Length: 49
Image: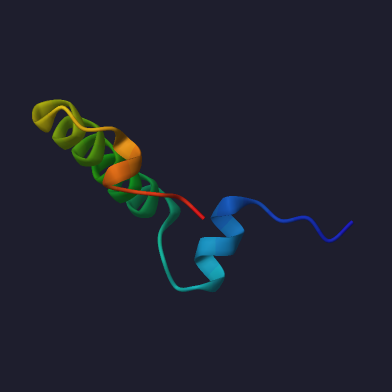
């Protein structure tokens, strides 16, 4: 069907899926904590496309 896993996708880019997902989780946590700390909506700091 042409479907591939996220691990396959990142491997094709020369990246490690585990490292990438950890980095993304860390980034998300920082965004959420910073928004809460300053009392602003998350959308003011980050808007996913």
